[in-house]
Image 1: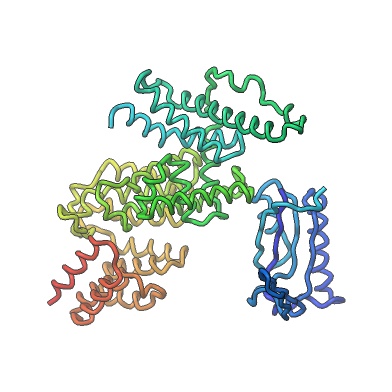
Image 2 (image 1 turned 60 degrees about the vertical axis):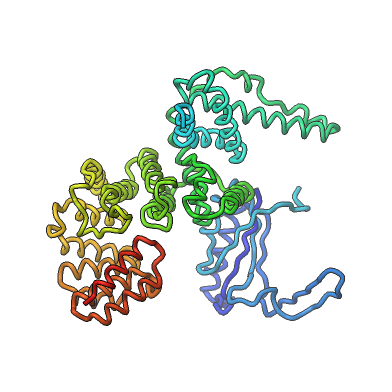
Length: 120
Length: 415
């Protein structure tokens, strides 16, 4: 099965600045983690998003003109910051993958993928 | 109920879950397994009155349910085949030719405990809401009907049925596995929480008012906890829960008077306590504690043991109980435990000491027992008006009618 892992985190938490040793460690942990997904046959895709201050929302409603506004879909302390799409045997395997993610504080929503048109 | 009906109910509860677990693993489809077991039980209701109850009921149920499952898969396959007549490949997908031969398949005994444990862990998977865990466990592991479960928890049957349908859909669509995880002990914690919730609902909850019409949830919980002791041998907390339930159960004959009113522990007729249950609980608890793996259920069982083994209320070792409550409060951080600790300290060191601890309990302002406990301590200190106010507050919050009657009596007895 394939699952999307939606990573919701507190944006006021500052990630390490590029160029510092902390940043190297932070990125190193991610690269190692991503490699482990590839080696384990779990990798499908992933992305890290720009913070929600860059978000634009378009709302459409039957018949009415669509509206475009500034900001994310939902205002909340924890915002969608990135995602993984992984391939796994079952939910327990995905939970284990999430637990191994090198992100110390966030909420990870796991959703089974119903259909993915670009799946080969 | 006639003999055959009794036999079918017994088979549904004691053997249905086992066969369901086996089929769910074999076919990887919980709905299919459940339907197959139901159809087999319906067939039993049709043929057993004529042919007699088979000697090996679980063998019979396994063979028939397995055949029902395969029949259903065949029907679905042929439907798919007709629909997609053009897709010739599909026609080549045939079940193994011996699948429906129907000769008795023996249940592989050594694998069955594993399958049932897997089913129990699946029903109590943390990805399911607890109310769904409870419903699924009683339905699929316990073999109870949806209307029995709905009646026991005082919810409409449609609500309960919907809860089960949604949970099964999530299990299927989210890919919740039927597996034994590496962190078995942690996952057993969720199973224990469900079994204890079921026990308490039967023992003290709203449904404890129900009288004898309803299913005895406390008995069901004891039955499933015993099963879990067999399935996960050597887990001290599972044994701790069973001991705890048996200690509570040993007092069921003396907990209420003839009019159904609650009788406090210290006023109960101890000669009516079930000594055999207490003896069994003592042994189970001792075995659990020898494993040197303490936990909250064992600590609660130790407290229950202090009560159960005191010949009279006056012999109760309150300082000992207060010590165990202090440990339990440290382990669980639960305000309800802190409340009980205050009660034990009041018994050991007097009402003023208990009241001081009670003042530190946080987050229980809407819990009737906090106020009734405060009332009792204030009364013992001669602070009658404050005691009356606390009884009034407790009466506003209480839901169980036996407890409410008890609180009214206490309030009216104030000087």
